[in-house]
Length: 164
Image 1 (tube, helix red, strand yellow):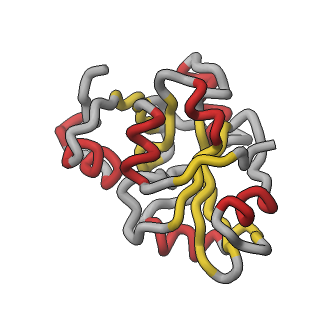
Image 2 (image 1 turned 60 degrees about the horizontal axis):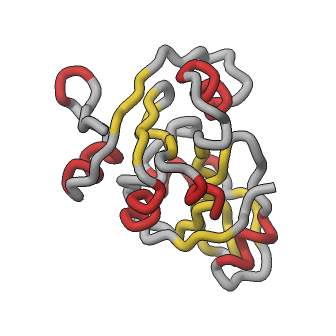
Image 3 (image 1 turned 180 degrees about the horizontal axis):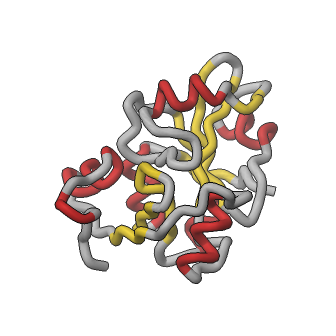
């Protein structure tokens, strides 16, 4: 995999974090359609990648603590499984403004990498079924492809079956 950043060498916090860690990755840019029903689904379709390899980053509130769940765009986040994976009891999707404030990214472009404030992160175990996975590179229309083990290591994530 080649290391690339978007034009002008100006990276996002996610790509800067990857470069700083000397992790191999590839950036895939595409023209985002604001009318797209699903950011992740759009990325999979436009990039011609199986939806099981493209992962969305969702921020949830688990017992009062913001927690990141990274699941395939082909599925949904199982909130009960997410709570269980971090030893919690109850989970609900976080307030969108809180997710944006905490991550430093806008909805539809939240990356699990390079977040403003590191949060507990759980990556769906299915990520390990693939040699590489795609996650948001920090803005709509920009995905980063990397090895799932690198994603897990850089985010300090645990893996668990959190998708349904």
